[in-house]
Every structure is written in C-alpha cells, then in structure tokens.
Image (tube, rainbow over all chains, first blue to last red; front, side):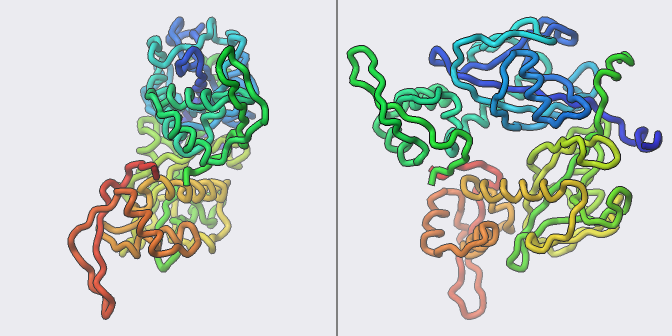
Length: 224
Length: 224
C-alpha cells in the first residue's frame, strides 16, 4: 500500500478484553488478572491483549484468555467495542470486548503471560481497575441482566445438571433480589428451555430435588 | 513508543460502517452508496470509512454517514465489530458496524465524499455489495427483528405521531408476515410505550384514526 494511504489513515492498535462472570458462594464474581507490565503494572484488569496479524477478533479473545488465565474453550460473545481516543496512555487503542459466563469451577484459573496473578472477585468488592475496564464491566453486567429476561443465558452459569432452586439462585444473585418460588418456577417452566433428566439429587433430610438440564445453552429464546 | 513495541503489535486500519434502515412503499429499505474509489469502485456498499486520530468510534460513524449521504444527527447504535483478516483486499481492516432506523424521508440523501451515488434499496432487491457488507447487513436485519419483540425500536421507523395501523405495518414489514389486528393492538397497548395525542387523522371516507406518539423512542422495554 502507498505511503500516502497510510499517512492519511493513522492506524490504532487493536486489542480484545474479556469479561468472565461466574457465580460462587452466593455472589456474582468477575475474573481479573494482575498486570505484570506497564502501564498499570500491579493493577487488576480484565484479561486481554493485542490482536495478532492473522487471527480473527474472537480467536484473539480466546488466546488471550487462555494465555493469561488458562481458561479455554469458553463460549465468548462479543459485547461492545471501546474506542475513546484517550483510553490507553501508550497510544490509541481500540478494544473489542467479549464476555462469557462459566459454571463454578473446582480449580482456580492459573496466571500466565503478562498476568502475575489471577482471581475471582465478587462484583460488589471489585478492586480499582486499569484503563476503562470499569466501564466495560458495567456494560457487561447490564447486558447480562437484560439477557437474563429473554434468553437462556442463565444456564451458562450452571453445571450440566441442576435443580430448580439452583436456577432460582442464579436469577436472584444476578438481579440482586429475592424471587417468589412458585411464580419463578411457573415462569421458568413456561420458557420450555428445561428438560427433566429423570434423576433426583438427595440432600440430607430434605425432599430429593429433581435434576434438570438446559435444552439449549446458547439459544436466544424470547419470553413469549 | 518503542519500535520494538510497534513491531510486536502490527496495527490494523479501523473503519466504521453504517447500516441505515427505513420503511417506504411497504418495504424495508437499506441506505447504500456507490463507491467512487478502489477497491470495489462502482460497487454498492454501506456508507463508512476510516477512523480519524481524535474521534471516537461513534463520531466516526456520524461523520462518514454525513459526508457520504448528508444524513446527520441520526441515533446510531453499535452493532458488531468485524475483524476477519481477509475482509479487505488492501490490508487488514477492522470495522465497527453501527445501525440506525430512520422514518421515511421526503428528500433523498445526497452523495458526497467517496460516494458517487446514494440510494434506498429494498432489502429483497439488494445489488451485489462490496467487502463483507452482506454479512453486516444480515446481522443488522437479525438484530432489528429480535429487538422488535422486546424494545420500542419500531417507533424509530415512524414519524413523530402515527396511527396504530402504521405501527402494525412496521411490524408486518420487518417480520414479513401479516398480523391479526385485534391481537396486535392488544399487545402493543400492553407495552405502555404509546401516548394518545388526543388528535385524529382523517383519511377520506374512513373513520378518523387516533394519533399516538412514542413515550420513549430508544428505551429498552421488556415484554413482561
């Protein structure tokens, strides 16, 4: 390409940043890494990094997440692209944000690459974040809340099989409000997204709870 | 910034592309420009262009739309960012797509800047499009269709005041299906997004039709 063409169109750097939510200990939690390099060295931030020449945006997000936290094969959805000219002190950086919901994991993620630590933080106790990552996280939370009402997104936060109580807990935690058990069960059943596994889970002296699985985890389904 | 840093992170070009829909003559229509420059010179494409150093992404979209079609002060929403490494023959170009819905306009848009012509094309009669713009348009149409069901997005396609028949026509055209008048009126009224203006519109020998306005054009409202 000609020098004139390149001069006319200065190129910003492009990155991806990844918002990963989970639910554990009754709280909505966010995956954060501690930055090992300037700028914001030592500050908590979303996993993410620069786009490589031959990868698509979603591949970049998968790779960065894997390098920095060892999480892989996560279903990522594009959230929004942030392009404020002042958002990075180094130079102009346009960042394509992705988000994901994952079930509670037995193992903690492991820090790698530019990250010196990795941790799940409860959303109501977030540390100060680098760059405009607070803005990105806020938008992701808003999206999650709104998608909860008309998609099957909540099931991404649950294990393969689950009880209706567990589904209700997810809704209660994300919405931050108590829900009426009878009403909730009626509404969630009406959506037609649940399949009875025929199995029961025993839990001490309680009545055994029926186990369900999601018919389709990523399908968008409108509430009539 | 150091040469090493820039070498490690080759920078793609960044553009915005804008999908503008309207409804006229009973059809959903798309705003297209004819490209005045290579690549794809003479081919129809979405309005759009390169990000300037000091503008935000949405400013870029507004500016390009204005330069190429004279449309301005349109409410644009970010749609999705397209980053396939092969999507532009010149070099790597990451494009942030925006979309908008506008009411039927009395005046045709006017071509300017890199555009040699501008036109509204019915969605079922689109010409071949440059780059991956078919993909962008398809996603925008899908988003529009899905938002129709749980937001007040449809009112963006209508003038300031409108009849319930006109609202129904918008839904019928976007969904591409006939709707039952009684059911539709019941559902749309239930949403609480309409305000009776108290005015009537006379139309020949028909019974005068009540005129409404949207309570809030851009508000996202869930259908209970």
